Image (tube, rainbow, N blue to C red):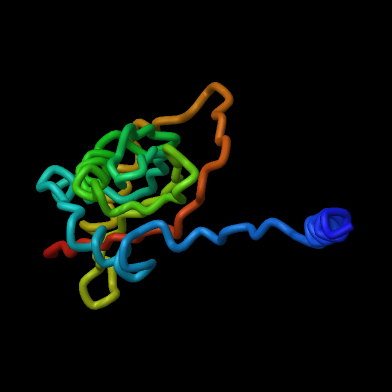
Length: 167
């Protein structure tokens, strides 16, 4: 009789038991602000980018393993190849800073970078406008022409990096 009551209690408790879904913490050690600060400190703008007055956007997908190491980086879109270089180098420096859930072996992330010019005095001069337009005309975008499987990727907040130019 005790076994029947124990069995009934187990069955009843299993009916009302609900699996708890784990919320994923922010996937960068220290949170969103730490991630933004990391990329603002580690994106190195080359003299080539500055001289061409390059601006634009690049979107990447990268995979991190359990230890936070970056396994691979894929460029989904970029306004120009030149823009991808500093962001890829900064992503490589972020090894071991990514957090994924224990039940996953790897996790995919999508991150969106924007590179802007900090215009002195908020007033663009004609020479700066001309240089930016020239760059825009000569840029060669990187586009995905085939379907891009996203699987279970996490879209991260956009990162905007601004650099200064001298008139």
